[in-house]
Image (cartoon, rainbow, N blue to C red; front, side, top):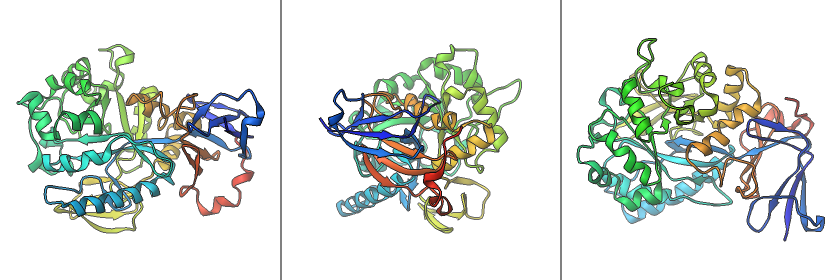
Length: 421
């Protein structure tokens, strides 16, 4: 049985740095393997010149990439439109892999049932060697609060008074949820939502609180009903007060056992959240922090104005706003940059920061036996990093991919960097 050995390298996993530790891949299964007993079975050896291997990065909230809006199909989309969208999707996911993100949850913002019916089958969980995998869609809305709508179209908003039938009607049926969806973000104060959390869990979906006016007690009730995540902490929710902690207070609430405190997405781009508040949240419960991009489809595109449904978004660097307003419309910062930001703002090392886009991200959606770790049996989805946290190359199921993250000035010194952390 043929194996690949990565050698002269350091590993990052579980928030720790394991110096000069080899890693092995079974070339048949394309999974991480134990060291083979017979050295003759090692058919390829890759010297990483003291660089660092980590699990591939996981992005659990991303609205679009390289011009592709994950929500752009609708009831008027023809079969040819769908085929063109699929081609665009494959191309965009191939490009996104070069940033070091090996898996993501394509995020569909609040929409009409016809949109979910069209797009969700395209986001069925995948396992590919040449593009970023889908882990299933993240459905952000439409069961959300009008007062915290952000840039979501309010004409799509609904309540859940009809219970399970209403949920299935909106999202296109039980099979659509079971096969194509990973996360549902909703506001627990919307009528009917709180009671639906157990049903959502039964469909193997994560329930996340988001775009909400929920108070602290309602948040605790949601956790007790099975909520395990908060979507983009601080954003689209009431801000905490020392006598009214709100949803933000749930990240380290004493009302439930520590194991039940929810994971929380944190957009570490310097646009959505002030660095000091990023630091505050991270330090409050680092084991439950998941860095997310919340990227819009303008990520990877030049600055300018872009049409989004019936709205226009202005992109200036990493900042995206609805035209002629101060309404934030998302981000355009890559996940590796978010990792580097967290290192700086929370004054932590690379191993701890990487954990928030690998181990913790995988645990938050229950895929820790497949991805997000360097454990034997996990997919050989890997990133190679230098000590500054730049991705120098990517391996998808063992297949080497060039990186788009490393700055040009760093190429010349790529193999000279020593992993001193």
